[in-house]
Length: 356
Ligand code: KG4
Ligand code: ZN
Image (cartoon, rainbow, N blue to C red; front, side):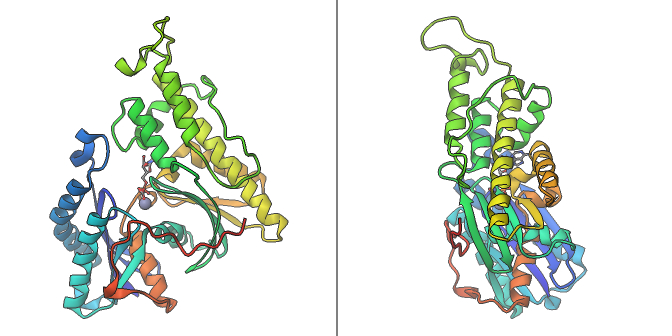
């Protein structure tokens, strides 16, 4: 099952060719639009769409060239059709649909979250269904029991900000470039994770997440400190408190890691009580690239007798390999697909059944 896929849901333009039957990545090319969006401190949908349009033809040609396949040898063409920025999704899916029609191949409309959820399966042949997934990205923070391709149970979700969004907002407060996750991780290396006490969410037993309070706490600390220029001036005129940005970054990252680790432990315990203890804990999505978070999850999982796994860093952030693999698995499983009638969906939750 050889699939060419296009990913344009946000600010990465990507194309890939994957053989889903053999789990072989045959070709891949990604362009990250940091330069386009940097001056604005966030992703500008119109600029993202234009950059996708400009870059897609060359990236697709590159992925196909690496694969050594003639387009006629493909079994299907896929694209992310949601969730994401509507105009950005429209560019990638229209491009892929046009190729599918021209080549007379099926078009597979693919869910971006499902692709993050299934990527660990591509790189780890020993990973079997079901597994417990922590999906942590710019738009999501969810605990999902992955039963099989197409069968997902939601255990917990964020009640406010996604964890990547929280990294990005805290990074903005620290004047770091967008997306700020990698920059916070870099800065945190020089800081003390115990330097600043930050609040933990109160509801200990819930599997849901909340990050808005943490972000506000960082903002309040900065407002009373001498870092970050004007934002750091004390409103009440009393002597500013000095907070080293590296200490704040390290303390923030440590707190996020503690929250994520604790929720995953609760989810493992919750499933174990139901006689469904998972053999594997999997982390996926952009924030799963964070090595402190990975290390925290790994240590906790080992203590619980659960194997921890996460995709390589390049497959944690957005890419088309995960889209091609997911589309291929769905085709192999004979699952239904909207095909050419699919429209871009800014929101597209997996077919989730709350079970917690
Ligand atoms: O999965 P992804 O590439 O795109 C979405 O589907 O959202 O995730 C992007 C998010 C951004 O918020 C980015 O700041 C965060 O992942 N991120 C990180 C790291 N690398 C990317 N957060 C923390 N540490 C990192 N190393
Ligand atoms: Zn993503």
